[in-house]
Length: 466
Image (tube, rainbow, N blue to C red; front, side):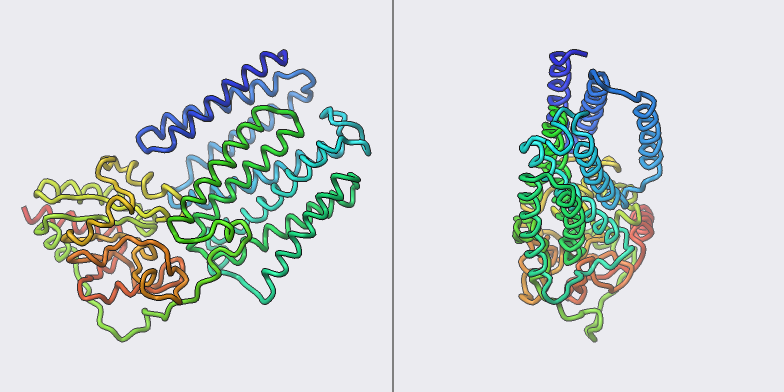
């Protein structure tokens, strides 16, 4: 394939990637967006392997077959609740791939047309160094994010004295190594660059609490994109540069939007101090305050006789796979003349859009699903707020307790509803480790059960009440 034809092929792939991002911005067009991305990637791979100088076709084919088989197996087996940690794991692979490609280019520069061993162009060394550093940080940072989301390690912030000073010192040392490597191209500088970047990835993510993981996953997504773009310059590969820039910029923008929605600092995400400034709330679970507990029949009666119900889904709904039963419950309520809407917090679940995807899977009408800013003012005029598996995103401590780790985070103000029905297995705290004072409010009724089982029981109670 000639360079001109390759350029046209990469241009088509880039356009499809842009269309993919546009499609993924809405649940209604997400399937089409996903298809555009797949087609774009197939074209990009086909163009790349058709370029002159490509050798070892059997290795490329073996890699495609093995990778495709693993991807297919994972996609068929993965549960929706495990998608956040899967995304984190995939980000780690992108980062590791960037390190491997940079290492190959450094060891065999002639094959990449960037010079000879010991005489690599300065521009290529800069691109290689940045891609390696960002890729290594992405790899180890994503591994920690995966471990926290998978509960392999504690989701609580892991901090120690002098941590910020150590991170700052390592950051300065990393910049120094990048300059040294760009000037001299010394092997020891490249090795130290990889080792230091791997260590920094661990240290940046360890102090970040579990409640902030959705933003961290988004930011690591951005890092992986920039790592790919950096290596794209080294390889002079247009598709890799464009794709990496798209992923990097979209991930950074999403992270900024989420930080703004949580009243957090984007610089804290980048520097690894995210979620460490707040204190901890007093444990409400150990309080002697009375808690009102109800049954499925109580919940069915209250919702059916209310004029309006706002459903607030969270990670507990995802774990229980209760979205289909929830849709059935909503349909019965609407038949009874009740207005039903869904309220989605930007960071509900374990990744952006987690709840939207689950509700779309259950064929919940898109016009019934509202974001925080669109529906928050309506809770005060709502008869029943049905909270199913959400916790931190409804916790009034975010507004009332300056010492709380989630203080300042905008919440869904379900506490303003006439009645709050809270579906939860027990009185444990949310993922942020902050207990919810809403449990003890006079207008709250706790429904202690598995989210799916409770919703199915409410459906039965609604059917029997006809």
